[in-house]
Structures are given as C-alpha cells and as structure tokens.
Amino acid sequence: MRTPAGSLRASDIGKTLTVSGWVQRRRDHGGIAFIDVRDASGVIQVVADPDELEAVADLKMEYCISVTGAIRARPEGTENPDLPTGAVEMGVEDLVVLSPADTLPFMIDDRVEIDERARLRYRYLDLRRPRMGANLRARSRATAAIRRTLDEQGFLEVETPTLINSTPEGARDMLVPSRLREGEFYALPQSPQLFKQLLMIAGVERYFQIARCYRDEDFRADRQLEFTQLDLEGSFWDRDDVLDTIESVLVAVVKELRGIDVARPFLRLTWQESMERFGTDKPDLRFGAEIVDLSGVFAGTGFGVFRDTLAGDGTVRGINVGPQDWSRARADSLTERAKELGAKGLVWMVVEEDRSLRSPVAKFLDANEIAGVRDGLAANPGDVLLITADRWKRAVEVLGTLRNDLLRPSAHDELAFLWVVDFPLFEEEEDGTITFSHHPFTSPSSLEEMRNNPTGAISKAYDAVLNGVELGSGSVRIHDPDVQRQVFDILGIDPETAERRFGWFLEALRYGTPPHAGFAFGIDRLVMVLQGETSIREVIPFPKTQSGVDPMTGAPTWVEETQLNELGIALTAEALARREGPDED
Ligand code: ASP
Image (cartoon, rainbow, N blue to C red; front, top):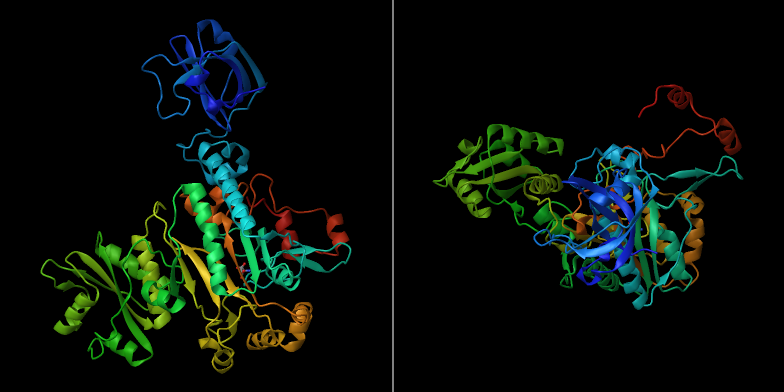
C-alpha cells in the first residue's frame, strides 16, 4: 500500500501514510535530516527529527525506500510554493530500505550538465531525471491524443510487418539475414508505405499506425537509425482530406502538451514560393528576413560578378538579417560558411548611419544600385545585408541557411505550423540522373507535364513543417499501374527490374485500387519541438549515439562464428581485422 508522493496536500495533514520512492536529496541541519523522496508522481519532503535519525542514518542518494509517517504542515515560513507538495512534510515512523544504490555515475538533477555518452550508458538513471521523466510522459500523452483523435474519426489501427523487402524512401535499407533461406535478406521498413497502400486495396479506407521505421542514414540531431512515425492513409481522398486530418491530429497533440489551441487551417505555401521567400522547403516562419530578388536592380551593372551571373542563367538574391555584431572576422566566417554551402562567394553590406553602404564591393556599385539594394531590402542604419549571385536554387538555399544560422530562435515557445505543397516530382542529380523527390509512388499533378518535362513536373506531395523542422511528408498516390510503370521508367528502373522489385505491388494495383492519399509525421520530432528540446534523442527513451552505438548494451556487437555460419555469412578481411583490433569505443 502506498500513496503517490506528489499527491500529498494540506488536506492530508493528520493522516499516517506510506510513500515509496527514491532518495533524491538529503540535507542535515541542526540534528534534523531532510530527505526528498521522489516517485513517478513527484517529490515529498520527509523530515527525520533527532529521535528518528537512526532510521535514516544509512540512506544515500537514490536508495529505493518505503517510509511510513504522519503528514503534517510545514512550520510557518518554510512552505515551498514552487512544489505542489510544498505545504506539507512527512514524519518518520517506519522506514525500510527496499534497495540500496551504488555510488551514482552522475547526479539525478536537471541542473547538472552530463556528458551524453554517460547519460546513454546509464539511461535508466538518466530517465529518473525530472526533465526526462516529463519527456517520457509527454510522448505517451502525445500518442494517446493521436489514437483518440483518429479513433473518433473512424480510423483503423493496423500493424504491418517489420521483416519485409525494400521500400524505397531514399535511404539505405537495414538488412536482416534469413537463416532458413541462407544468403537471402529481409529489409526493415523505411516506412510502411507499400503495406498501407495494400490496405487501401484491401478496402480498409482509413488506416493509421504508430510505426517504427528504419533508415540507414548518416546521423544528425534530428535523425536516428530507427524512429517513430504516425503513418496514415485514406481511400477516396484527395490532398485536402489528408491535410485536414493531419491538422486535426497535430492540433490535438499541441492541446494535450501545451494546452493551447492552434489556429486552423495552417498556412500553405507552394514549394516554389517557399524556396523563393525562405530558401528552403522547411521554412521557419517565426521571423521575417525574407529573400528578395535583386536581379532587376543589377540588370545593367558594371560589377563583374553580378553581371556575369545574370548573363548566364543565374540570379542575384539578397536578405536583410538586421543589426548584427559585425566584424571582419564575422564576415569572413560567414563567407566561409556560404562557400561550404556551395556558393562561389558572399557579398555583405552594412548600412551606415548616413545610409551609405559599407562593403568590399561598394566601390563597384553606382548610386542607383545602392538605392535599389537599400529599398529592395528595406534597409535601416545598422542592418547587415547579404547577397548571393548564383544559379537560382543555390542562391536562395545559401541565403536560406544563413537566415536560419543568424536569426533562428533556439527555444520553441512560439509554434509556426505550415504546409508546403506542390513539390517537384523528381530531382535531377549533379550527374544528370533523375531521382524521386518524395518516393516513387507519388502521383504527378499532370501526366502530360510529366511526360513532356519530367524535371519540371509538379507532384501531389506535401510536407508539414513546424518552426523550421520538417515534421513529415505525404502525397496523393498513383493508383494506376500504367502510370506507376511510367514513373519507374523515368526513374530509370527498367521493366525487368520493376517487375522483380515491385511486380507484386504492380499486380495488386490491377485489382480495383481506390484513389488514395496519405501522410506520415515523425512523432519524435513533434514531441521534441513541443517539449522545447533540440535533439530527438531527448524524447527517445533508448536512443543510439551519433555513431549508431548504444553505449549501454554495446550494440552493435560482434556475433559468434557459428551464428554467422548458420546465416551463410563470412566477414571480409577488413571486418575481421576490425574485430581483432582495439575496441573503437
Ligand atoms: N512513406 C512516407 C514517408 O515515410 C510518407 C507517406 O508518403 O505517407 O515519408
């Protein structure tokens, strides 16, 4: 029998109760010991008076204990209004150590900075910290809100397999060797994409799943090898049905975690507009500093770099990043950054008090050009202006990245949702090969356009974006096997390969496939933003490090030779040398 520690209030005064939890803190003052006992519900202060000290003598941090005692009012002036239980304290009648704890590798305290490797090595202790506990609870409430919202709308939750063959989403597959069919491999799903489309063919009409997806990609703060999506699909649906449903879910999750109502419908920008104005397909709308086309200003310029760019198929774009702490070193490092991003260079200008422009290129510009830049970028004294001259995509993308680097708020107090729609259907690689921009099952906006000018074709794909974070993507799907073949063809997948890899799916499309559309968003990312975290690792209970390692269990690990033999797998000489070599961690 126990009472949750965090539930104790003034109304409990006079009761004798039992609380079980962990020793979070201990202070000894003038013969009295104050012990904060924490359980999942909160913290209560247990006070051992001089004649009770013996019972608590051995208690150390994070011992798991059970205390029975009287609840009493804290002495006047010692109440703690910041703590829900701060009006009361508990005496000690009986105390049992349920489990002692070794000396801790780190303090269970949100205010202490701990090396992330140590946190992951002892994740079970890290998760005892209040902030991590709050993140776990938030995540659970988010998924509950998702299920509730979709259940009310008649969606069916359906599980799809994790041992499948490849689903192309643009990443490398994670493979699992088959023992029963030596030499053959399953792939873990990059997403349940084809299975959810099969469910539409199966007549499910409204599907969702909280699905684990696996993509063997390079790590970044918002990527992991495995992550969780809300995956969703509907039949007899067009784009707006999807956007409407996903909005209802996102709004419900925000209400649950932040207690606020987000206005609907969300803003929509076409991909083209998003790129033009923000230089990215995931714009952060919490601040302005939009990109401006300055090509007209420099149409007749004598400044060689701009003139040559405009004479080719390039453009000149600018952005006003406002007052900045500006120095030569800062200018150099930003220029370096622009070059890393692929720009040939970066032109910077600082607006002086007299509205003249201080810039290494000022001397090459005439008065009209200077006025044109100032007006175009609504420049005021003190503002820093950045200009790129390049082919369109690079010119806007570089400014888009610098815009984020310089102006993006780190906290996520404000929430700016939007949809980016009308993505290009295909992307052209540097070497001229064509790849899909969403995935190969996405419907083109116009077949005609796709056939005539594939790289200019628009798709029925859309993304949801929150504060510059891409939450997820979706599309109206191809439901005609013939169109699906044409897309494979443009992607350079020849009919034999298409048959071998997707024949089973093309066949399914031939049995009365309803028009359908869907979406998936990353639950990790959504909860990360709503909890004000900057890495998805903070909202994943047991994540991997940036190099894909779990410091606690040691995964991935070498396996026994016999296991490999059973699977028909032999390690290469390089792998064997690594195995014999020093431990890399
Ligand atoms: N399968 C897609 C993804 O994982 C989402 C979708 O198109 O529904 O990004």
